[in-house]
Image 1: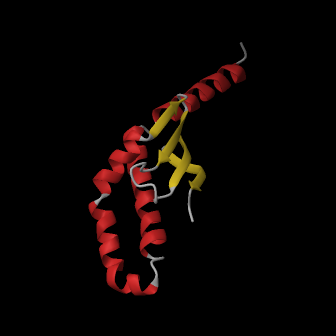
Image 2: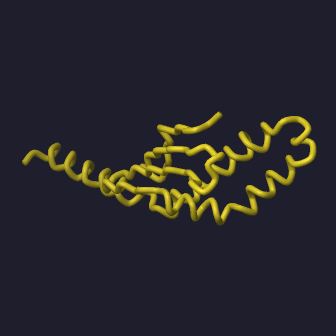
Image 3: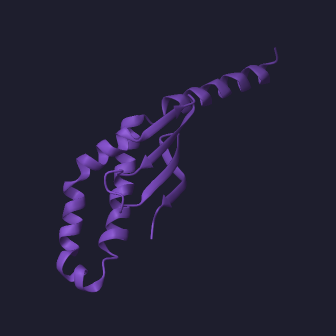
Length: 128
């Protein structure tokens, strides 16, 4: 075997090993997804309240989302499927509350690789 081939093989193996070692786990995804969901809810729900309601309830809306973070994280944990392919993972989350039909459902797909998360698909269903 040529030295260049051997070096290429070693470098390739090290790169694959590095990707496997830095493939974010479920807990890391939950923290990422919670941060994204909280930010979205603050921006979309709390910031977009109609004027008369916003004047009265905007701060309470933000506090409600902060207070509800453990429940949101549990919902994310229960509604997420992880497809672990070693060097990367795909997380598929179906965020919905069937008991509250008025709330929209969300489908989110995220790529986890090299310690990073890249959300490549986010769809809202049943949104007005």
